[in-house]
Amino acid sequence: MAGRLLPPFAKEEGPIVKTYRMLMAQILSEVTGRDQEYVNQVIDLIDIAHPGKRREIAISDEEYEAKLAEMRREKAGILNWLLAGAAKAKARGLS
Image (cartoon, rainbow, N blue to C red; front, side, top):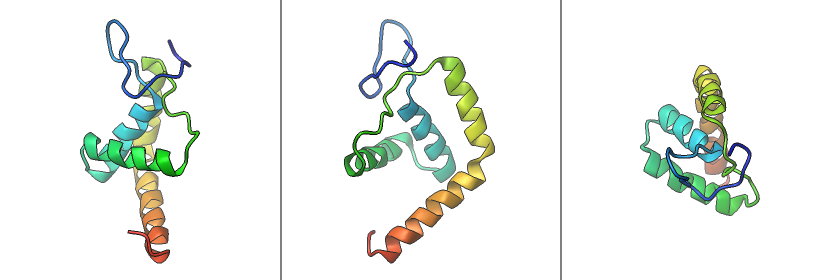
C-alpha cells in the first residue's frame, strides 16, 4: 500500500489510506487554524499552479504519524514560511 499513487482521499477496503496530501492538509490546518476543507481548496489551487507534485502517494500510518510529529515540532517555522510567502505574493500584487 505505501508508496502507491492514489486519487485524493482514496479508500481501500478498510481504513482510509493516508497520503502526503493528507499530511500536508493536517499540518496546515493546525498551523493556520483553518478547517481542512478550506486547506484542501488551497492545496487544489497549489496543484493547479504547480502540477506534477506527487502528493497522492500513499504512506504507512507509522510514517504519517512520525512525519506529523516532526512537523508539529516545526509549527513556528511553518507559520513563518507561510507568512513570508503571503508577503511575497502581496508584494507582487497577488491576493
